[in-house]
Image (cartoon, rainbow, N blue to C red; front, side, top):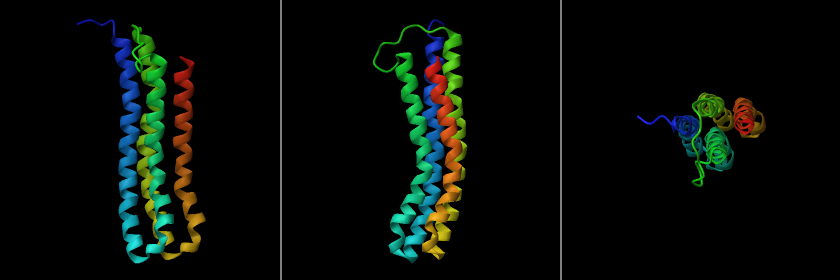
Length: 158
């Protein structure tokens, strides 16, 4: 087996992991909040815009994972066909650089979806409390943003 492309393979695996795991978390979180949102607008269709915002919040992690994957693919030359052989250590560093958003993106999107469900329940009972209710899932977003920042900084430092 030719091991000369192992570094590029590891970098590609990191990029794919960032998009894959953050995307899975977002799909789950958005789906969870969507089910709650559908129930909420059944009771009060006027809540649609507020509920939609709460449903969309867990989707940002998937976007963050995609962003890290894109930056990694560009940095390594895998996007655009300019990739050259990369040593295994560098490929492993790219892989590790993608892990923060892959792991935190997956977990935070799931928890943000659950928190969005709770916020949707608040808005269903007290629509005037939307601003306060939105703060709960927004707090979970903080950790996804921190993971995004670490992954981006790590990829750009290589």
